[in-house]
Length: 428
Image (cartoon, rainbow, N blue to C red; front, top):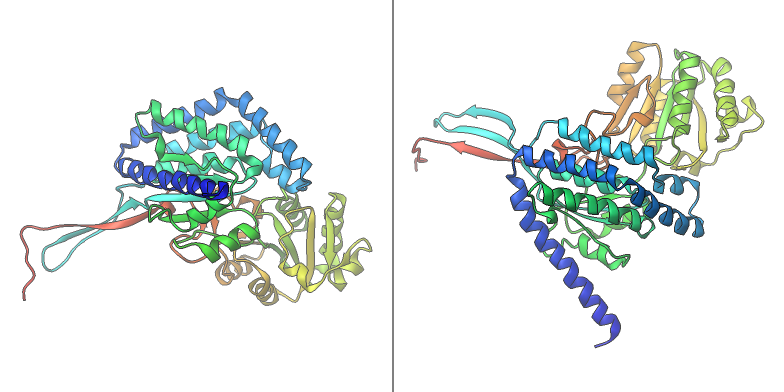
């Protein structure tokens, strides 16, 4: 047997063992008391704070490796952890503690003519595989949400965050043990071997029930192409801000700058600005100037180029582009219908916002735009599970299967029917 074959067999055995352990741990977790799960989450938050210096040091090693690979400023921002971000992760865990436990909740209850009482009850999905890039915080967010919702999870972070993810996972392992829960409820694939991803996508012999990818187009496209289990995924975050004819200029400027520039590398960052031609004379130039003054490159249509000579010409590809950087595409539209048509053609179904003082225009936009999240007079960067009161999110789903928008506790459950009778039999 060659050395390569030995390595392949060793990896396959390791991954199969992760799947078996996850399935076993998940059965225990599915019926674990809420108090035990909350204790584990508080333990994990405490461990993150106590081990902050070591986690940040590990993250600095990840940053050095990423910088050496010239990954770009947007990805470096996603990788970076500091004390504030780490404490934010711990606070997200504590926010999840305060949320209702969805497991066992009655969704609906009724009685049928036969006298049977039927209850639709929330239950965990089972074992969730999370494959992610560039974001060490996903290690904690995914682990916490899966834990509270009664799901075992297998985490596979990219090699560029391996040091950070390993230590964050260690915090959860210690937290689970201290709470009397199986530490295999949260496992990590601690190898850079990309073959491990393929094994997860195949389902680990039926032991993975759902795959959640968090990363770039290449990762998500591979997951959607190869997965043999259901997938929660979005391919792009091509988010739009539409400035309606009745928009207040100061509000539009503030919302736009935050939507684009607060953090350019997140999926909720605005990538296209649409301006109603009815307000273009008063709004277009100031909005473009504000973007350029904030060091954002602007690619625009003829009207945008005429409004400011610093604007470069946009191509057809720009309307589809998720820049994840300080770049935005700008286009004038002939009204709400045109804006909706543009978003329908070029959008990715993630998040869109309208800025307007016209309540009817806002309602029309919210009703007609078919994206997972639609907003009125608010930054697209609020497209986040934590901001939605979910504590955190495991991702933003843009499909229509099972969950849509931020995937939080409820979205990580399915349901079963509990039927109670008094000896009924069905007549022939």
